[in-house]
Image 1 (cartoon, rainbow, N blue to C red):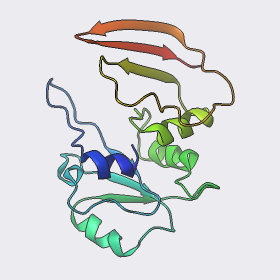
Image 2 (tube, rainbow, N blue to C red):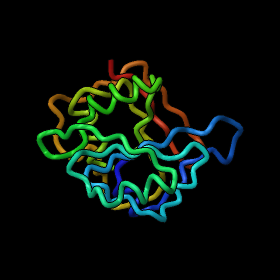
Image 3 (cartoon, helix red, strand yellow):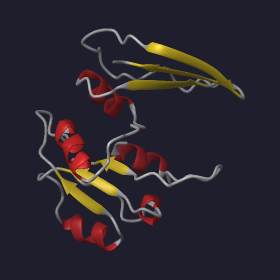
Length: 163
C-alpha cells in the first residue's frame, strides 16, 4: 500500500475476524511522510517502509524507534520506490508472495510494469465516487484467466490470473 492510504485511513492491517497468521505490512513511501503516530507502528509484526534515498532522513530514527523497518531502495524515473528493486529486496528477505492492497497509483504501477500475477476485484453496493484503479491507461487490456466469481454478503468478488 502507499503512504497516502496510511495518511488518509490509518489502517491496522491485522487479522481480526478469523484465525491466522498476521501479514507483514509493507508501505511504499518515497519521501518518508509516514506518521510517527500511525496505528501500523503497533502491528504485531512491525511495519516495513520502502523508501528512497531522497526521503526525509530526519524521520528515520523516529520511525525506527517506534518499530518500523526502513527499506531504502532506488527510485524510478518518477522518483517513486522502484517496484522491481522492492520485489527483489523482499525476495531476499524470504517473502515470495505479496498481496498489493493499494490505491489507484500503486495498483496502476504494478499492473503497468507487469508485476501482478492475479487480480481480485471487490464490487460493493456503494457508490464511492467512481472507479479510479487503474489510474492511467494500461499498455494492453487485462485478460483474466481461471476467473472465479463469488457473492459474499452484499459484495461480489471477482478473481482471476493474469499470466
